[in-house]
Length: 91
Ligand SMILES: [Zn+2]
Picture (cartoon, protein in one colour):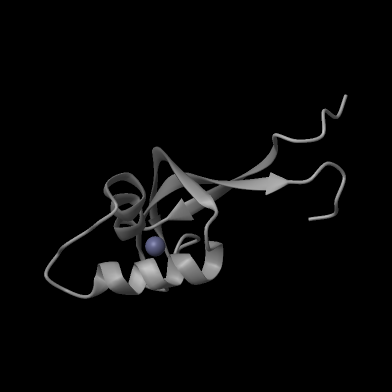
C-alpha cells in the first residue's frame, strides 16, 4: 500500500575511490584537483540527492564513474543514490 510520502528509489552506483572519500568524509586530498573535479561532477549528476556508501569492492572497471562521471579506469565501489519519489509521480 502506498503511504504517500517517505518514498525513495534506491539506485545502485559504481563509484570511483575519490567519490567514496567525498561521500564518507566530505573531502579528498591527493595533492591534485581530483576532489574538486569529482565534487563538481557529482553535483552536476546528482545535485542535492543523497549518496550513501555501501563500500562493496567491485574491482577494476573501464566504465566511467556513476558518481562523478570520471572516465578514468580504476577500482569501483558500491554506493547508493537515495532519490525521493512523490507517490505515483513518474520519475
Ligand atoms: Zn567518481
